[in-house]
Image (cartoon, rainbow, N blue to C red):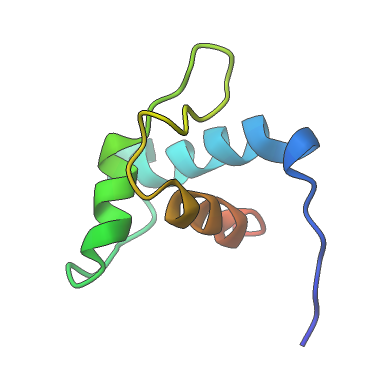
Length: 76
């Protein structure tokens, strides 16, 4: 197992933009099984605050959204 530290303070804008691209570009590259309803809710309620950052107050299940952003970081 490898552990790669990710600094949210430096990478958060890139991770959010990258997830949006993977989910929306040409009908999306990522499929999520319907049983992961909390993750789907997190993605549907995700709000960008205008500066490229995730608005944690407006996003439901923001911890799942953060985990999803980290898991998608190395997929190109």
